[in-house]
Length: 411
Image (cartoon, rainbow, N blue to C red; front, side, top):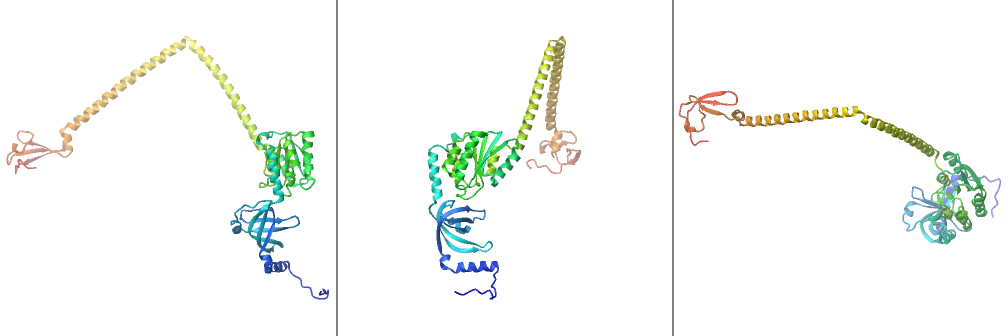
């Protein structure tokens, strides 16, 4: 083997040069460019871009995987946490972080992962026993005085819940029952914390929660003893384990399931602003009620005054005055009605006379012809003679003419 000499010049590479070199090595290996890998999906995520990011792992190792959207759209099944799959793709390196990745172009199920199989087995068993029945679940109180929390004292979930409780409902007393929420000590710790709260504190509601993670990280909340302890709690339990897409058996056994620890704290308490709104509404209702009572009393007093007034002789006099006014009003109305009808009749008659008047005919372009000497109206042509004088009456004025031609049958 060639010995490395301290006196030879160093071949120092930049990080980008090294990662580029490694990428070229990976891409030049035919085996690594056409590889099938079998493992269990963990840390699965699918952002809005549609690309898939997950880890494939077995009992001894794990590797990060990326599946681009166009390849993911060709799949005939939905990958999920805990599913055992066979992935085909090529090895490469993400140079920004120097992370070796499997770029997956095909994914097929290889059977359920061991943890997921255990999850389904326990779920079916406990469901058959009725631990998840809706009719056994209780509604947490609207205004809890004491709130118990079962979680890790050092986790971010506790701070999230405490911040939410202080913001929404600071009057409640909060009691923490600390416990590990991950690892081998977590299940007995969670069970013991639930039992302590039920036996010693007896809060109005208990919050059980932790932040998100892989199926292994959350497995303590799938433990059979933990699920039974949640179902057996004498105090209503709200489960807030993981993120929105995470489901554990504790969620099914709890009285309420929240998607996050923060949401569990919100579900357990009323909002302070909402309470102030309720108080304002109650105050407004009280004011309205008092006003209604006073209005009823005023109305009663007015009724009594009215009764006394009706028994007074002056009331009868007032009634007669009012009746006299009403008779006078009806008489005036009747007379006016008759006058209106008479005027309408007169108008109709005037219109009829006007339409029958010869003047009205003249206004439409006609004329009246009379003999000049006799004044008789000429109705037929043979009433006249040649050179006879006639008078023609039109709408405005009259004319004098002489007959120059007679046509008895003309038009």
